[in-house]
Length: 437
Image 1: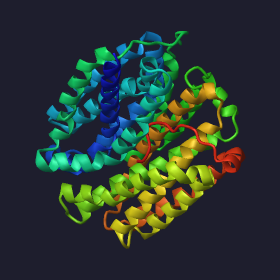
Image 2 (image 1 turned 135 degrees about the vertical axis):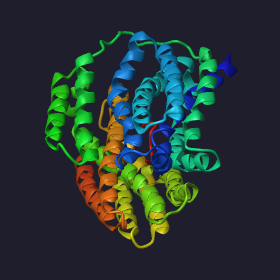
Image 3 (image 1 turned 135 degrees about the horizontal axis):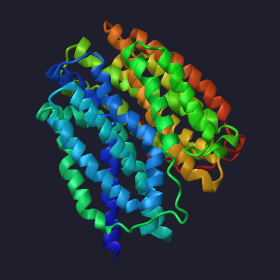
């Protein structure tokens, strides 16, 4: 029985890594896909944004579906849908079909990701539970930072279609092992807020669309209104979280930070392929200094620095990030290493600080909302920074300095969320699974 639990855990981790990888794995392959399928220049951004947008909008609802109908059942449905839509992506013969398939794929991912922690808690107890939960951060961190590298490698050795086909055997293996997972559901079955989900999805879409298409800017206002209505209803998003001083600024900080991270990843790839005319593998390797530095800094910060410096580490990370961004137009690869080091310092301290502000029974809801905002911020970054670069492809200067400006604002929002208790005591809290870019 013990071995079965750990095999089931492996299936969970593979599924979650697979879903998070697909948020970034297409970015390196996007110019190649565009060259093969044709279409509009903005399709390069849509290949990524079409996945992360429904992923972000449906994460909270996906969690409630698992609570209501059974986490293993919803998990299996999500994995099966992910396999089918991955196949559809690989077989797409037009940009429109690929973008539509990516959108459904993102919705499937939103059914999978929220079930992981609940299924782990149902299958493990006491010390084994702590060990099982401890595997999430490293695996998900690796998935978050390795997506572009893996995408470049697969595209180089096969075709861009292989980026999607790799999900098929992995997903089928997860389905085959999923019977080892225990079924679990919430003691009190939550209601599914269909209207709130529609408002949230519609609001995020109306905000992202005009940025990607560079037109119909009045839709932005409509998007903000829909998001406001969703929040005012208070059914989908737990408004009690906003009663905690610093949590709303934490959401703003997460949105801005991950907008810069995802946007910069795409811009580096586009710069390497469209401006410097390097191949897809060379473009993906350009991100290696960033990924390596992020991993090293996250490890060092998590083991030693957060306990000693607390929330002050956020400012150190953002300061290092500003230095790297300012240097990017002049020495890209060393600058990306500096950026990665800043990312690792910031994310480790940020999630600790953000979750420290809420009550213990609210940690799950807070982490879910932070993850959703992280994906939404990434979508905004792909839309905004991709549009800026594609309109000024001669250099990285304009994009880098816009990123600097956004990070300066991020420093301000991070200051608003700062916790005096964490600063004094250096206490930690578990971070959500999704870290890095």
